[in-house]
Image 1: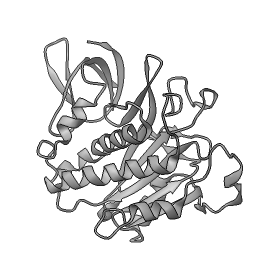
Image 2 (image 1 turned 90 degrees about the horizontal axis):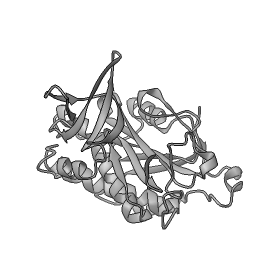
Image 3 (image 1 turned 90 degrees about the vertical axis):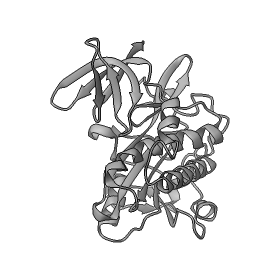
Image 4 (image 1 turned 180 degrees about the vertical axis):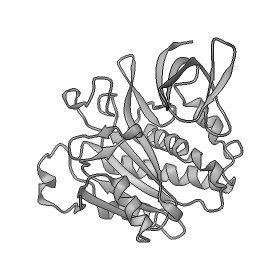
Length: 286
């Protein structure tokens, strides 16, 4: 689907959910010597990740490009799950990163780095405690229950680098949630649901963490990324089931995130198994 510019008249159809101010976002984020080079806001598209991957592989986007959609009609999460929400009820954006000086073997940390940056930025801007579910879900607490309010999806864009997509539920009401286990910042008691400062906060935090990680040539220990991710990871210390490709599953206590960003499970057989990809189900505290 071709993106439509955010100047579409329908943007005022829900006054409780005003449109993003693209010009103000550019003024606040694009600066000489900074990471963010271009910020585009479109009214509606299928997927910002798909659009930005296409632009990047065609040589029409450089590192630091940010594409934001007021509404996604074909947003994707991990394992090709659909991600949908009412227009202007959340923040749906993708960024292009190309850390050429970092060994490709360490690029697997990029979605985890984004999780740390987004959680940090939202905690400051929205006043909500955020937690991370390995590898790339963002959790908030509603009542006494941890629920998913956002997710991250990373995709290679050929030689142009990596496109990382972020989706955050901001003002969704309980009757608008895609599943009962989902949440939004509003339902978690956010002190602010103004999407402009929330987006600026996330992108500034991402710029800071990305710069720190690049300066350390992608080393997760030297950059502080591995320690910070572990400190904010709600998966650690829980008994989980890892549903792996090939219909295989492992159950064990999540005891660490290793130097490659993998989740380490301690099984009942006394074996420590690193999990690099899969769906993680929290079962109970250890």
